[in-house]
Length: 149
Image (cartoon, rainbow, N blue to C red):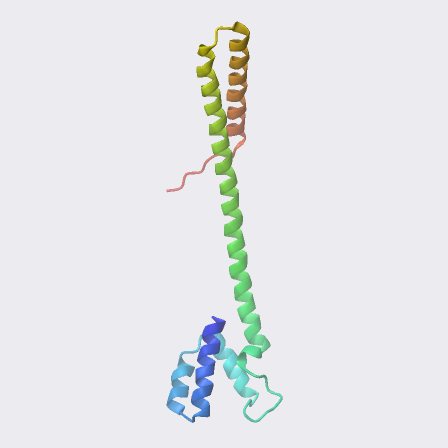
């Protein structure tokens, strides 16, 4: 928005220096309302004759304050979306982790049949049981899904 303001103001200055009132009016009518306020305030300082006047409307505190407030509002809104996105990503990662743990339990439970040694089968079955319990505990600890349509 600042680039737009600077561009239109520069074109207005070119029209002003060329004495083209119609072109000045054209560019002035396309100023954003926020910039128009600063422009009018700048004109009141008599910038063409007053050496102490601000160099442009953009140099006025009223312009900077409005732009900075708007930018801060958008930044805060973006931060909120980013934090919610990270939170959702963390939850989805935890669900994937739980799925992998449960898949490990299924794999180990299936492999148990391939061994004939009882102690090895019992050990693998114990590991599979622990994996199931760990996966379920992980899923239970996650927040409930809220489906929105």
